[in-house]
Image (tube, rainbow, N blue to C red):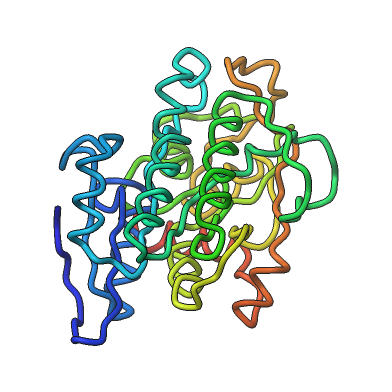
Length: 295
């Protein structure tokens, strides 16, 4: 457990962030909430077994958090095909347990993060919160089961944020990988037939904090504005780096993977835009800030 820098006061809201020490999103959440004056406590797998009900109950009760943010998940999409039970443990059993414990102790709002992989990927209009999910992978199915458990058990005190294609500081991600390759390679091959919503973790953390402060409930799509395929995202990264590395678009069939990726997973952010009073900034603008600030 760690207690990062905060501007604490007796009235400051308390947050418990699962995955707040090493997670790509969790680190941004920790910093964003602390910067907004929250008292922040983190909980990770190095502190104990997160799926041990007795341990989890004790930690949640002791934290007395106003909001619990669950940024822990099995995100190794291809490995999930070979280890479905392990994926289900983190993606479904853990959020189910969090919701049940918070319900039993009668306190705490739960913010749980889900994914664009809950959708089939078949379509050409941005997915809305009310659209019917149809996941095509173990990862997507276990994440959908997790979000459904949270909303069923704790409907009046839970919020599910579906997000996608994360990049940001603190942990390896697609953008960092392309940047590193562009420095040592003349060309990189990147698939062009998967289109989604690139999302900056610092922006996602700010939106999450804003929704938590409103005690928002239900399902929300939280991604940066705009859309891109992986090759387009890579090309933008290479351009920002000033590299001469060539991005060569290839079909997914030339980059075989165990898990089926959604060909179209762009998320509609109308609901989030209305709540924030403005649309999320476009992903190229967020990408530019990330690259220029960290590399």
